[in-house]
Length: 236
Image (cartoon, rainbow, N blue to C red):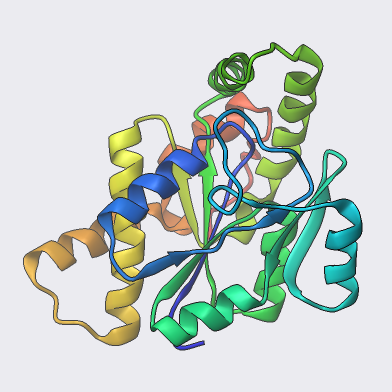
């Protein structure tokens, strides 16, 4: 693929979709891959905007035909990225952004090792629970059972942080958006040997702070709040 493939993952409720929407409005020449799913639309979601909504039989036909770059089953629903997304981005000369879970991200990294992986974290379990509850209310019902399932799943997903090149803690939206933008610009500058004007240099410096090896000050309090901090762990 001519462009850069960016992978962004996060536990449900971490604000990943909001970050992605802001990024797309700020950075040119980055294509967003709309995933396929068998879950029904939520709230104001529309066909082919948030997802390509399809049936389980159709999704399984696509699996059988080898049409997915990655796919996973999450909470009884399938999610997947079509290989065609890569073809279309390459034809348009654009980078491609995949919004996928940790299972899908692992599949993509196996197939495309130079993909740039970014993991978004909520600041703590209480904040995550509040965001999940607010989203549930916005969808018209408060589903405490589903919230509990997603909180339990979040802890397991966060354990995958070591697999990602960059770590973002989404506690302050403006800073998280700026950091995500910096990662994209920095990776482009490195791969294409772009001249380092003052703004590019600033973006490189900010992106470097988000590298897993440098993210300990931001990462460790989050891991501790979820009961996952290993004091013997070094961020490398």
